[in-house]
Image (cartoon, rainbow, N blue to C red; front, top):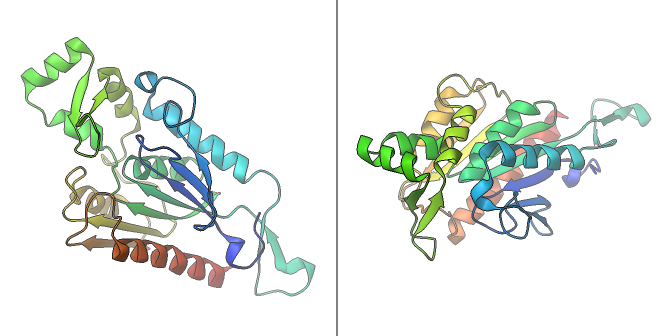
Length: 248
């Protein structure tokens, strides 16, 4: 619940699909955990999941977190009328979570006040599949499975059903203007071996709003886990909270 101070804005972190506790809500120091359906400790079969299902998971979480009255101080007024009841949520999406972050912001514009994308993977799986040779795509379609290389996985790959790719095509956002007008900060490592930084650039170009910053880390990796990377992410979130508090 918003308290009008530093907690006036809740922060929800959307991680990649392969991590446990892929969504963390609350302060960065004391988060609560959440996993998409079929991931981590959540029920469901990963091979049967879809981008659409994970989008519903995120929206359900946002609806639950913002259910009931929340408020932020209206610094222009005094007394009881100075409290404005409203949900206030910053989404921090990394990798595939960056795609889901955009989908959630489009679906809940009244509840999402800012976005921070880290190695944002918007449309990534669909784009990567379309870039495969024709014969490879036919083989994947016939076998209904795609072994997507990933050095961070113990097996060295993600096993993705072809049906997942086809369903994901319904949620692509980079083919046209992205109808999001809240402040957006995109951070991407230029040495990311999984999701090209050019995707974050494309997201920045397609966003409808003008309050958009893209930060490229020349030596940044996909997970942006180095000390200076983490400092940058925390600073970026804090700066947005300060900005939103000033506007309140």
